[in-house]
Length: 223
Ligand SMILES: [Zn+2]
Ligand SMILES: [Zn+2]
Image 1 (cartoon, rainbow, N blue to C red):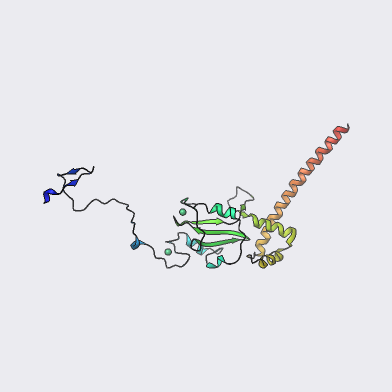
Image 2: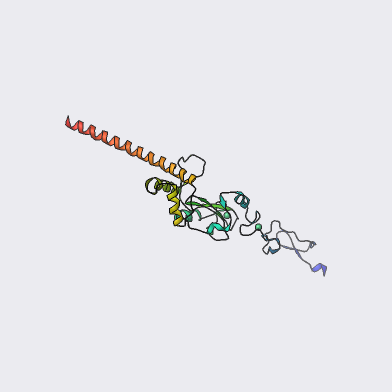
């Protein structure tokens, strides 16, 4: 019976001269379809551990980021366009969209009236920092974090109509929006004040130029 065993050569042709080897050659890097035996059973809770959520240690160690489940209480001001634009795809694997759910949101960093959500990609496990408000930079070449437009506008409102940090926080508390520390409100007020001053200077300059041009024209016509 041993003579009747016919083996295939490397090109797939039947050959009687080839002997059957005891162990077939195994291709390397095979992806295991049914990998229940090598899966990760996480006991770290909702946030996950460093294995199932790489980078979570940084979030847990930060004092500015809220990783407990209390991030989803209260009310927020959300700019849908900005949020949805940043949810289009993952910053690492470019798969998308990122899913907004209890399981994928790992924390929140509040910055005044706006902030960032830390959302885990379901494809590559990367943590994506997603702002839910539009941002701007006073100096585009600087490397620091951008400022949220809503906070600068709150600073302008504090100068124009609300009148002081205490009143701002009274309004925010009534609306069940997160309150802002006096120190941060002062920063927003100063930033808005500088911008208002710049606009006022620009406007004055333009008005001065127009007045000068009108005077020159008037003098030219009368002579
Ligand atoms: Zn885990
Ligand atoms: Zn990804």
